[in-house]
Amino acid sequence: MSDAIRELADYVSLLYHEARNVRHLIRANHISADGWEKIVNLPTNRDEAWRAIQPVRNEARKAESASTCLAAFEQRFDVDLEGLQLLFENPNWRHAGLYGGNAWAQIAASVSQLAHAVQSGEVSDQDVAMSALRSARHNTGTVDAKLQSLDANPA
Image (cartoon, rainbow, N blue to C red):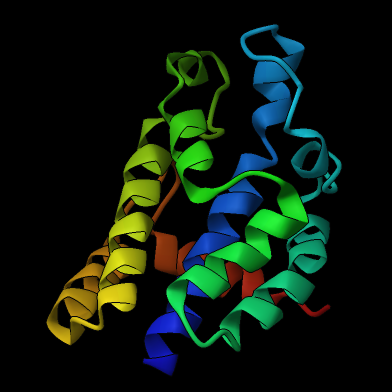
């Protein structure tokens, strides 16, 4: 199960990293800033933001359960996985260029499926969810490629 939890933490990290672009929806008055302060306070630079997420990612990767893994992020950012999914489903992303949007909503749904599979202990469901996430596409490529690219930059 620890491999599945590590992957869950990795993909959840990506969701919070992408969620920092909520600032575009806030600036355009499409959503209120209430509740998004800790995410908006992440650096705007992608590499700096990724480095800022690493302490919680590392903590979450050591979790004993999916719920504990997710709780590390929820405590740090005051937004849960469901909140991220709702954020990415917001139709106003279409006005935000290559940030956020429906592709990330589907990725968030897949991460939620992985979390449920890890929590239930269903190894075959975990394998299916991890495989789907590795090849999932966002606005500019695959999720796996984005994770590798972000991890390739030194801290």
